[in-house]
Image (tube, rainbow, N blue to C red; front, side):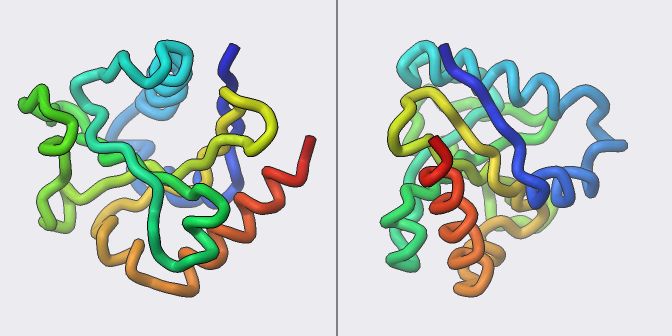
Length: 142
């Protein structure tokens, strides 16, 4: 059974859009649990490409991942997951940043929510190393 835990950085970042998308955080959690429980096969139409960051090395080592998210009412029209990415237009460039526990499969931590300008935020080495440290603490918590 999958579970989603929320890091305070996620909560802080999500506040930026919470008023514009009432109920979206709860829906995101529920859909993400369903996604994990389906062995990552059940993709809602607002879930995009899902992958591990490969930079910096610390983020890759801690399996810090991101999923492109289309904020409502926008959806991804392509069935091909490789094509489900956000345009690099600030207000549409959104990613959920998360990690899965190293020992307990299905235990997920929402680390952050990059919006707007998700790609720009992911290029900030300081931010990515902070996310890696937070993921490391999560992995160490049995």
